[in-house]
Length: 607
Image (cartoon, rainbow, N blue to C red; front, side, top):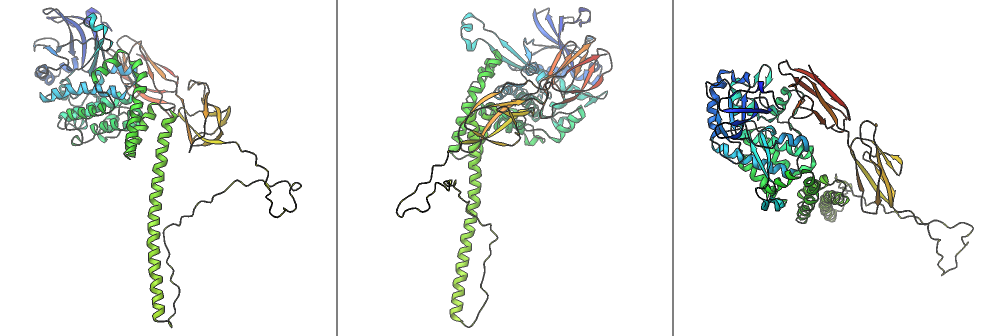
């Protein structure tokens, strides 16, 4: 949004051209350095912060410390305001591109491996800062800049893989520390980003490099899952959940993340700082090892390919990663590491839910595991039975010896009772042959002659089928007939059948046409996966220019006048609830309770 010239800050050494963004701490402008004739970014600290005496006193010293950081993944600081200037500002490198926040708004979440690559770039910058004694304290997508650099020559352009180079840069080092001068709250509002803050930072304890390990863990979670690990109806609830350390593990929130990435993130998000990775470098080493394990040995090349064509990359990603996961799963199974094999196959199945071969792989391992447990119990019972048998043999032998030595002594027979269950072999039943009609049956069969019964009519061959529906819980139709589906198995004849999920209401979901599946005989149950996603809702802000709305539980970024945000409806409950805070240029914020059903359109207004 371009501000009117009369509202732009007037700086002596820089010509401020336009506003390019703003946040809770500063407004960012594009400006021209009159002396060096280059474009720069100017971050002007908000008035309510710069009027705080302690913030003003610490501003210059913090800026000087950050200016010492020289790293390709850190936005460079060029200049800082003088004490006598009417504005408190920083002059920093201008990065053409977008923020990670806007990328997530567009894509909702990133492929797990791409999210790991982004974290590697950010982690490299954080580790460099930590070595210089600087802790960022506010690692979040808004502070991560993403840009693409085109080819520098026609020769470079001819090489498709090198045509676009990705750059990841992190900004706003040290600014969060300035807010500590005012404490955690000011005028009843939480300063900084509570959902990204480490517990010790919230509690006012010692903030070390492990706070940035936590922040990078939150960033990874949001990139891979598509939402924050710590959420609440208001900042107080978010702070409490961070302090309690309660969140849904990434693999459960989005199974496509996989168990290995999930465990890395869980350790980074540990409530106690000592339980996290000791450094960002060790967190990055864990991510690198997992990337290499699944065949992503050139992280920066992967990032460039993704940013150059996110849609195409995501389309090819599944076809690339699933075979690798299957390969790793089979290798783990061959060395009898069933938990590891299950983890690999489960992630592959989450990425490709309709793959019947993967379903059979997972179901087969589950059957084998159950069989192993049953055999283990049978072995224990057999061992117990053998021991009891030896005991009974010994008792009987002793009794016989006693009777031989003293025949006049009589006693009750000794009975050994076992508390172990008795295994009864299952009854084997065969299909009875139909009796011939009485009129056709001979009264007596001649001796020595075999009389064959008439052949039984062939029964149709069937297969047990279970349908799993993801998303909305609609009605299941099999061959046009409604059938129960929640945990139910159906016996279907072999051949082609149609399956359809009918939405519970016309407004909630987009109906999908019936799908035809070929039912073939197999051991066990044949699983068929269907989906019925809810329609997204939307929120639009209208009113005075300059007004903004934040709805943290519904979408993570700031909504400006004239903009619309899509809101995904979670399942299985078809409703999304949250509080939106609307703020005008000079007005007092107001809060609005919002409840969205699938396909709903909500308009927020200011004033």
